[in-house]
Length: 160
Length: 244
Image (cartoon, rainbow over the protein chains, first blue to last red):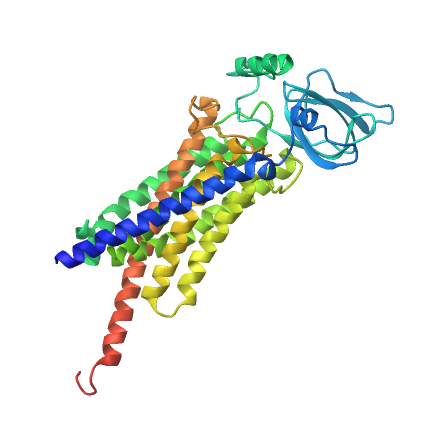
């Protein structure tokens, strides 16, 4: 009986150690890879920081800045600014916008910068946030760029 | 714990729980579906499409919850060689795969009108697809090895290896930029979802849980009977000629 007990204990230790090291190793690999390779898109401040070259294809995501949206005379081309509260990136897109596209909400766009530094998008996806509420009710937190953390971060960013 | 390792005892317990679980399941589904589709408001951004959430989000929670059940069963099977633990893992896998498929499909159908696409390879969507493949792999391993004990051990090891994917699914939306939005319910600063919409969501989650308990117990009884049959068949094959 004693032998059986120690074998069970041994198995417990072996399986636990194997499991813990496996989980630990995988998470370490993920962090070593960094957020970059696993992230879907760059934010405007990433684009600014890395000085992404014109013509390089990438995804850009952030909030559509309130008051930045306009439609050109051809009726099919849209211009708006994507912001992450730290930096802004003007975007131009020709095509159909998704239903959820609106100012103050998130988007993920795909395309490249042109020579003037405007991001010419070939697709625009709407990204909605984690808030769900009935129409006409007050949000729990204020809209874009008003979160105290964001403001502090923005201040720190412009100083640095 | 060894008390539940006795199949007869387990069957008795299952038979006692089942009627209550079935009753709860019917009531919870009725209340959940009614509040989800009739007695809850549209969303201020998404309108009526938000109702997909009541099917989608609880299915995704179940997909992860059932995986953890399967992993605990696999751990128990590997360490303590519980025969019932092995059967429990086997009983949960198809349920988990079903809820994962439901989450993926409803997510795609919801994504097209809201996001503008059925699919993107972001951290959340990709890790949930991997979860689906882990379930399929677990079931395939059971099928591919003749010796049940060896098959069970191989499948259990796979289930444990796949556990690392669970925190990745949960935190993918925080660690990386994704198209999928961050958590609305299980978050440190409390839900960001209005009470009128949280109610149907939680009712549906409870209904899915009840469904899981019912089908899990049925499948366990089935697995126990299948084992008994296999043992009886083997005993008959090895019995000396004319012994009956």
